[in-house]
Length: 360
Image (tube, rainbow, N blue to C red; front, side, top):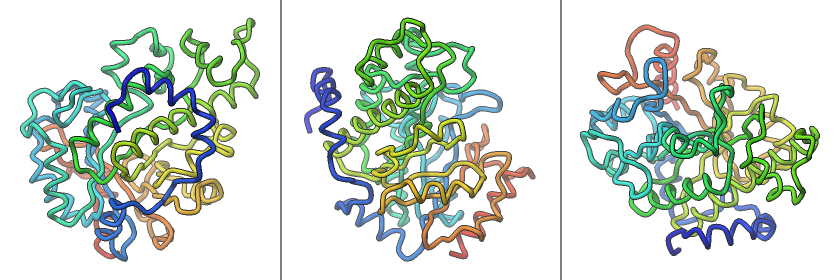
């Protein structure tokens, strides 16, 4: 496809109804998927992420993990027994791990194309390599557009899925797909945001998505909020899917995570039916059955087993690995850039998951 322009992006957004009417696309066979399946073989998806998103207490400052060596990381993933490693195109702080023409590049990178080298070395080692984008927040973009994000009063992710933000995200995805031979990407925090206040940009979204003026009272009904949230997620999905299918078809792996407060917005949601892979990031396996009833017939559900305080990786034995994939993540150590070997609940989960991966 031609590179995204403001005009064609807005034109496609306006065709939302047409795109919604397209057939379910989740799990369709495409040339790249054949390579993905070949690398997985008869095993389940066994995936892991060394997480660069966070520092010791806060979002990682740009450059915190810039000394990471792709060769060391690929060796670590090999030792872990993964068949699918997930690393970063753009971290939550908004900085890229390859020579992006859209996002600012992580300063001080030891490898100027960290993501590209991870793909090259990972493929040589027989692994799939996925990138990462965070839809729920992008610190760099938020700082540039304070009028389009919620303030510190919202402790959760703060960025509404405005057309301005979606255009930037889609250009970033397009740029990465053109420059890096990755097999797909995880797109994180793909869920409704909260509305403690209704920003002006959200009031504009209300008109765009529901076709009505924002209520003069300033308080939409509960039913209207649910529909607003559902349509906001679906519009974001349609535009991201349009970019991927028009640039280079790869695996789109979504993470929400699912929360009880958002249940109504997920009913009948097209994204769940069309995504290639969907992650249950929470430790609670109850979500697997709920997801199975809502995803498309070819969508792969993947269960996360480490990363949160509440995870216990030993429950992997309760997961039907013929039907579900497995995933885990661990914050990188700020010195080694690899998961910490210190004795901690998550380090224990990493060891359990390593044993599981090698046994499957």
